Every structure is written in structure tokens, then in C-alpha cells.
Amino acid sequence: MNLDIIAALGQIAAVLTVIGGIFSYAVIRPLNESIRALKDTVDEMREEIKEDREQRQGLEVQLAKIDSSVRSAHHRIDDLEGRMP
Image (tube, helix red, strand yellow):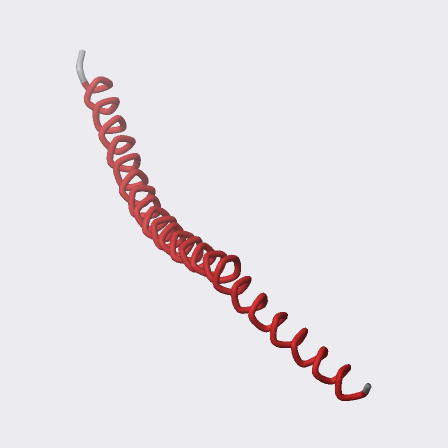
């Protein structure tokens, strides 16, 4: 009797192992590949955001310089207009 139970448990374990392998191959593997692809996409987006942020900061510096230059030009124009009769 005990041998029959052990044999049945062995067969059940073998079947469950095969089912687990099929499940892993059919479900888990594609999910892992999708997760990896999503991670790569997120990493690319982070890099693009970083580059955009750096570019925006550069543009802000340029804009500040241009603004200062325009203000200086307006002051000079105002001074010239004040000197004209």
C-alpha cells in the first residue's frame, strides 16, 4: 500500500513538474521578455529626458544672455533718443 502511494505521489510530482515547465515556458518567459523590453524603453526615455533637460538649461542660459543684451540695447536706444533734439 505504501509503495502504491509513493508511486502515485511520484507520478503526480512528475506531472506537476511538466506542467510547471510548460507554464514557465508559455507564461513566465514571455512576461520576463516584456518586462525587459519595458525596462529598456524606460531607460531610453530617462536618457532622452535627461538630454532634453540639459538642452533646456542651455537654452535658458542663452535666453538670459539675449535678454540682458536686449535690455542693454534698449537703454542705449533710450539714451540716444534722449540726446536727440
